[in-house]
Length: 396
Ligand code: CTP
Image (cartoon, rainbow, N blue to C red; front, side, top):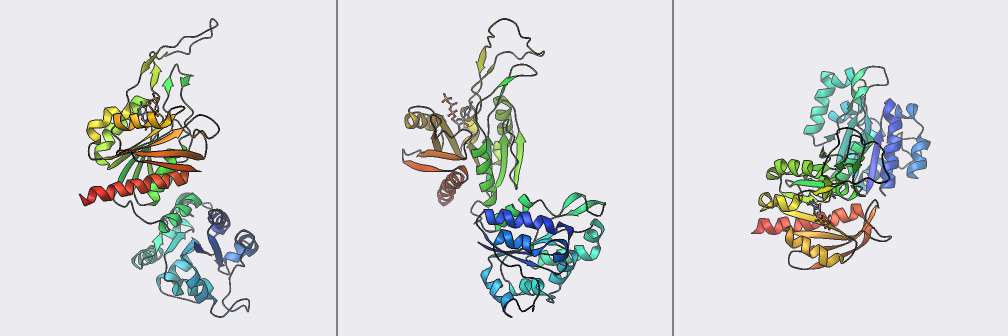
């Protein structure tokens, strides 16, 4: 997509370099417009090196066509003002076009994101707040600043929103909101079996698949809650997260949450067994071997069956052999809408990898092989299927 970043005079201008970089890495075409004040904080060359385009700053500096603001407005799919200082916010709120950036904004009729960054007193001034309300009224989307220690030494609201948050908002605008109104629970990662205060047993699940699904669903407008096992992963933007340790904990959370949700994707790898006994004190080293007796954990999907009637339910099958037969059995036993079968043996193993090679098996026996692809892409395919099932259900 073609994105214009408008950079204004705030110390946070240096963060816009990373922002531009993140968007370029996601294969967006990025053009940067800087106000004259912004060029006092950072050099245009930094943006030019990242975007491979010259930065536009002045209206009539002889470097560009006199109609460049119109040409750029026709080229862009989206504009993000980051950081947006109080001045550009005031100008936008009142239709003032007295430099290249403000003239471009007035000439652009696509979506505009505004990410304010300024001193906290300036941000909370009634006039700035009024101007921001006007911008919302005019259809601009505001990405609220963060709270924290500001460059001036004050603590409060006014820090430019985190770059990941800005990227999330950009991607959301560019994504079709096909899952709006859909409430989705996603589980991810492994659960554990505690042994003593120091040790536990677990499995190799990385949580990548579930986190990717949660992120993609949020981008498509779903209301998403992620119930995560023991993984060190950043919570995707727009997703609520609940951390759990054991399979029992995961089951209890889902029992409480499920009635309020429309769908469940069980991408987690809940431990099937847990040590029979938890030692309150650390087990001391003694003897050449240690025997731990395990007891069976509940099967979450099977236990939840009564509350899953009328919900869209998707499971995963992690198999090292007889992939399709085993997956088909799980699909029936767990009463799923479809199951994503993946082979966990060999070099294409899904565990810990960014990639997955899978086969989707449906209730009616249809099988759809998915060639090796990024888990983020597979997440999209899974959600497309959910969307289809949702439509069918709505038509009935
Ligand atoms: N699952 C579950 N409760 C468990 C274990 C797994 O609900 N205690 C879910 C998983 O999240 C997955 C599906 O059931 O969506 C299949 O999980 P998998 O580990 O492949 O199979 P199991 O049912 O545990 O059977 P086995 O380990 O014998 O293959």
